[in-house]
Image 1 (cartoon, protein in one colour):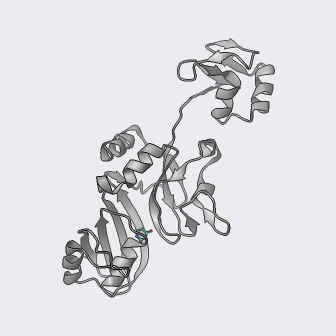
Image 2: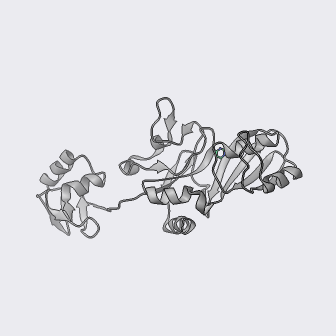
Length: 236
Ligand code: URA
């Protein structure tokens, strides 16, 4: 059980001061009764709490899918650049979601954001080898021998040999790459190692979770229960 004012402010209804004012004004009901005592003990998961006529749903965690646009860093704060946190709509902002892993500033596509540190940790852990699929445009045509090189693992500029990756070449200058790890600038550096340059990069999926192509660049939505099931299965 928790204090009503604390629960309401945790839900993002307002500051403690603001929610107290709402309670005093008779705008809050619990289990069908208007309450005036903001210190009332409620069970946030069981009590039916209505504020200004709207039922509010209590939950601890939020799971979001962002179609990341170029020009934003995958961080919650940055001194100079715009961050993906700025793309989180106000109704989710109080959960303080952070990006699960990083896409480069110029990379677009699927980015999961959550405040569930455990799930994020598991998804990023090398132990689970969650596959990530990228679409890329490169400056020259990829060749059959690149497919073989990626399958064997390539040596990056710092001497690291990558795990086997899958390269597909659906059309001239366009490729699909599946990697199971997430080294810094990995896809770009893998192409560098075979003498090619990535000019556009977009993440299409992470494990079984696929970017919703109906999401405009910069748009965010909550994951569906099915997508949640996929993510949880991925990190088990
Ligand atoms: N590989 C890269 O080079 N950049 C990304 O943003 C993601 C994977």
